[in-house]
Structure formats: C-alpha cells, structure tokens
Length: 152
Image 1 (cartoon, one colour):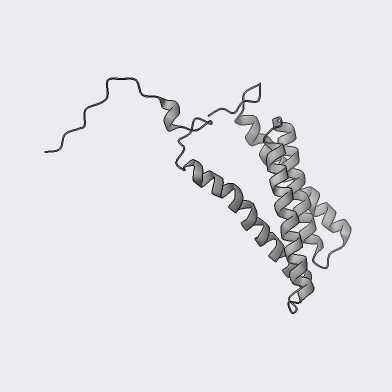
Image 2 (cartoon, rainbow, N blue to C red):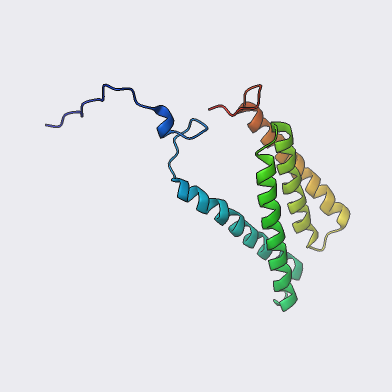
C-alpha cells in the first residue's frame, strides 16, 4: 500500500521556487540566456526571409534579394533587442507605445515590400500599431500595481 511522504516541518521558501513575477520558473538561467539570443535571431531570420520573399514577388532569388533579406534580418534583430531592453525599463504606457511602434513599423515595412502604395502601407502599419498598443496597454495595466510593479 502506498503512503504519502512526510511533510517537512520547517518553513519552505516560496521565493526559491518562483521567479520575480511570482509564477513558477520552469526554465534554468542557462535556458533564459540562450533564449535571449535565439529568439531575436530566429525572429530576425524569419522576418528577413519574409521581406525578401515579398520584394521578389515570387520571382527568382538573386544575390541582391539575399543581401536585402540578410540586411533586413540584421536590422530587425538590432531593433528588437533595443526595444526589448528599453521597453522593460519604462512605465507601462511607454512600454506599450514602444512595442506598438515597433510592430506597426515592422508590419508597414513588410506590407510596403509588396506592390501596394506607401500611403496604404502607412495606414496598415498604423492600424496594426494601434491594435498592438490597445492589447499591450490592457495587459500591462491589468498586471501592474499603481507604482508600476508587476503583480502575479
């Protein structure tokens, strides 16, 4: 017959089992360091490929198209890391505005690589940016207290 293991009589530290947000931290510090490099690289490569594919409109892949894709990927990676670093140190309103501006401009640039007009690309970027701002502001507003500290 199976029995339950005896419980510890001492106090257990909840901080050791949870991260800064109060949620369980299931990944190690090494995994977080790897992800902080891998996520921008993977997103940048996908974005660069997408931009290059939009630009060639289904035509053949050329050396200039490859160069455009890699330069776009590098620019995306640098901007992503910069926005992530700056946004994490700001209040919720600025945090949401930074990510909305990044997402809107990234989408507008991709949309601009198709055969659409600059005006339509700008409008689509503004619409996407506004939606991202609304979603992120709501999320940050509901997950922070009045002083801007993240809650559980």
